[in-house]
Length: 348
Image (cartoon, rainbow, N blue to C red; front, top):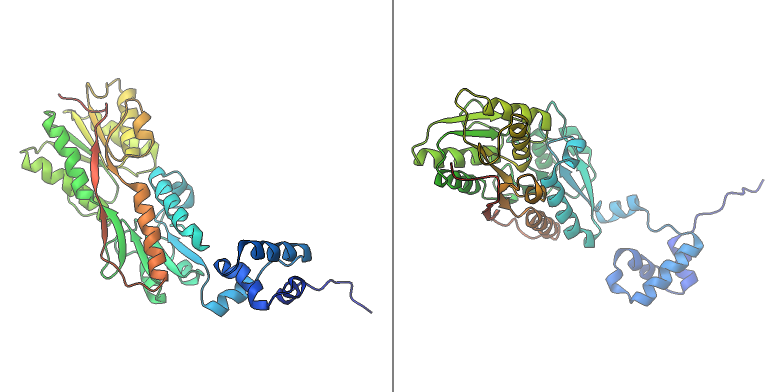
């Protein structure tokens, strides 16, 4: 009995129909720069007419030892990551930078009970290179990257020896924020910090948190200020952050200024102040960190430390392409910061 199942068209069928070599058809998919635009368009048109779907990705990856994917390691869940405007801007810039190379991004999220994605997921991921986004020191996923021998690009943290990295001047930015408030005459401070601190000690597992807290505390200490209260709150949990800010603003001796380790924490602090009937900045000045788009149109517009989030993603993408091309690991890149002074701060 004859089977009615139709044979799947092959690359050779396309080559015969167009009247070119098999290698020329392959170049139309894998090395389009080797063909004229007119010839490539003709090959792809004929392939579509024949029903040829293109080279098998599994076979191609086996032949080239490349998967065409970049593993992007996150500390948080995907739902939390997608609600983080700073991450969104950075990831968008990275994606635009690597997009012309045809590489795809494979997002590996973390889980609530641990920092970073499970090591087993990293070991199983089909990727040519890994990008770690703001992970804690000693995250098991990073050891899995090392065990696989994958090239690694770190965005922000942790700093690792002999590893490509791009970040910003966290300590310098925090110092700018604290100095601004000191110069406005403030002497009672609250710090709304990222979690995983131990009291007032600089003991976070996250390098960026340690640097920002050190920048605040060193600058305040240099000004002779010791009236400082530190409260922790998750960066992306608005309700928890509002509660933490409320604790600071209802203390028996209320701070006149709040230093917040992210814009998201600062927005929560502004909301908490409004709920308590406090005026920003007349009753309390608030400073954020990041300068995400919402900072310019919050109520009031937020004074914040500006870092180049898009530049960070662009540099990370360039580092990815350089490492995939076999370039040596470059020195770490530290992007400058500045202070965007808006209407959430005022002299006391």
